[in-house]
Image (tube, rainbow, N blue to C red; front, side, top):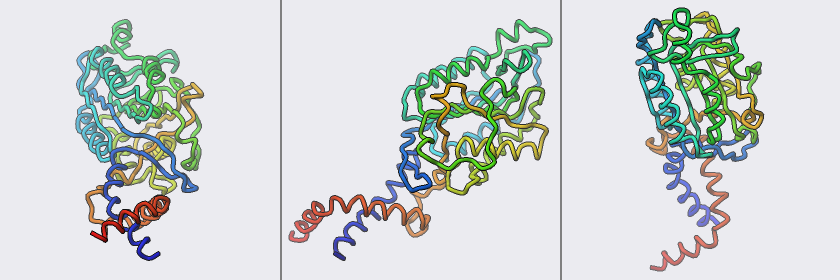
Length: 328
């Protein structure tokens, strides 16, 4: 019995680094509060768009390129493949979304994150929102030109419905009315990971509401980065940050530093609003490249126990193979 245990234990320990490395590339399975495995994503992709240099009247936002680089770094550490576009005009902005969705949005096992930093505009008493590309004029000076060049949030919603990836999170470091999506009152205590988490979802978080302005130096973006990088958005301490947790964290933290109140919501389609986007915080730590004795004891022990349980099923076959090797 002791020999059998040693064989399985050695197999588990040898396979531990590669198992953790595979988990780093995305979120393949997570554990709910009951310890059950929930399959989520095989691959993760992020589209980052920053508009800092405006050519038709809007004030420039000089800090955006550096902020986009910071977001890119934290998402790469999270296992995302990142595509970045800076200062697109209307045509380039539209193509950036369409190409990204065509390339990565049609696989149900993908996780998609969209991040836009730049000016936003709300019209018709908050019923319509727009992303402002480099070549959009001020609506107060050229209304028709603005409507021709700005990208309406209705188009973002259409793309969100077109996506077949299980989870998509849209983050806008811009200010809109919450009525452009299905705004929800966020819970004081976010729900724990459950089987419902894996259901499809399209979530939206904006830096502020209609009438609020984007500051020259963003607060929303560094608060978002700190939430993942320093685990501040993990409100229940389970090692994961859900889209809901991120919304609660941003709504509580950003107004402490600037007159902006982030807005959170989901798409109005019921079938696309049941799940929750998930970040695995451990993915940001290079566990796979760390010697076994320095990796997290709990993570190590949990994996070995599960590995033991699974390999035990095939124990007789492996013992036959081991015994044959010993006779050589």
